[in-house]
Amino acid sequence: MRSGSAPKSMRLDKFLKISRLAKRRTEAKEALDAGRIECDGRPAKASHTVKVGDELVLHYASGTLRVRVEAVPERLAQKMDPHSFYSILGDERSRRHEPRGS
Image 1 (cartoon, one colour):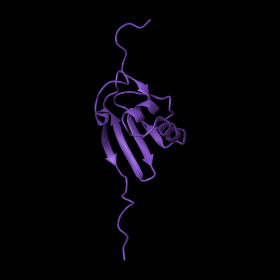
Image 2 (spheres, rainbow, N blue to C red):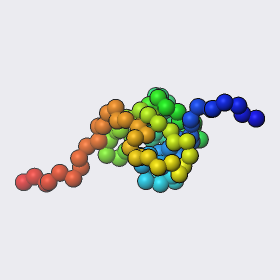
Image 3 (cartoon, rainbow, N blue to C red):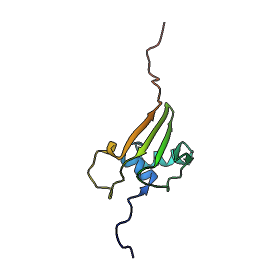
Image 4 (cartoon, rainbow, N blue to C red):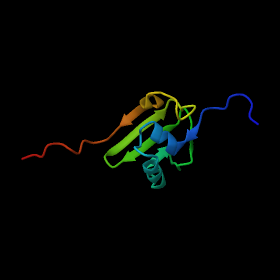
């Protein structure tokens, strides 16, 4: 039996979906299984418990995005801006759709 309030936490794959860092939870799980997402400098698993203050590095095909977890929703139906759950620390994604040269 739990007493008091537990710190807010959530599975990483679920957090990536809710925060819209991944389009679908299955897409997040595939990226995690492939080692393309790190938490605090180490490759993370889908079941990793994400907490406020964790730093995530997401390796996309177009580059790398580094974020810090700022909030974890208490419940899935909580109405909040998905981008309020994290802050961007670095965005090294490239623009691949530049006009073709002569």
